[in-house]
Image (cartoon, rainbow, N blue to C red):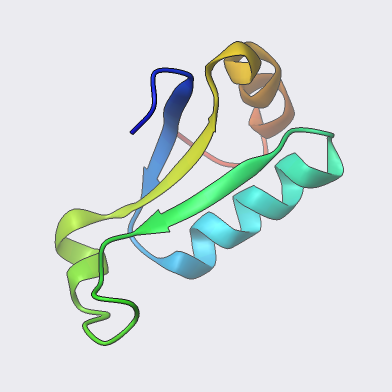
Length: 73
């Protein structure tokens, strides 16, 4: 992970992370979903390692404001 990347939240599924990513994109924040599930071949690994939502470190406060009230922490 690069120094300017920040894990905003870890989700238990790619669907949940994708929904949060879409909300952030609509709010003007670029976000990326990162899964370590062997390229989708081992989806059960999402439940053990989680699905990370990455953003630029400079946009943490803005991203939290966008997701506030939409997604529980």
